[in-house]
Image 1 (cartoon, rainbow, N blue to C red):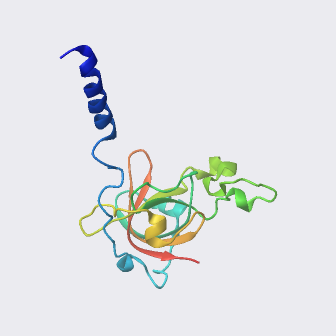
Image 2 (image 1 turned 90 degrees about the horizontal axis):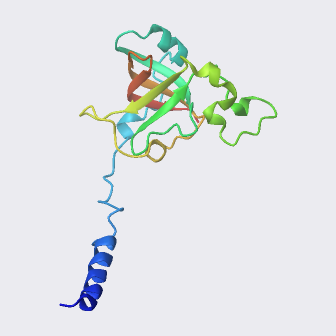
Image 3 (image 1 turned 180 degrees about the vertical axis):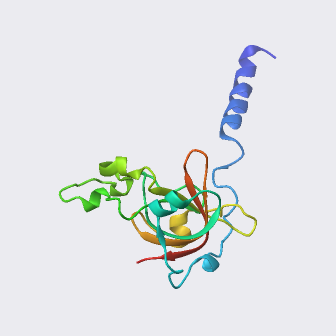
Length: 172
């Protein structure tokens, strides 16, 4: 076969290879997760502030912790039922008069106050794995919303506080 006759076949193969066999970005349909067991209708008792849990955290312990969702410009963990919270004593940019910050939940105005005042919250299933899905859609939460979490707190060697949540109370 001459080179001239091979060029159209090579082009067809290349185009087919580049486009694939359909759109794979969609993936399988998402599995519906029932989050009802995680949503608490009443606050779960006396909640500790994030800073207090940081100070007391050594090994793993049961906690009820309260904080505001934020601490970063994107406080959500993509594809997971997890997010960051901040101690309520730390002022967000929206708490500072005259500040027109477009993302006040990142606490860019008070970054120095975030040390020892943040925690990662992960909502886990019975298998111990973080639930799949966007926490905003699963629980109807948003940045700077106050949440009370019942769960288990762990602090790693780097000083990061993680709360494995068994229940969430969402303040409106």
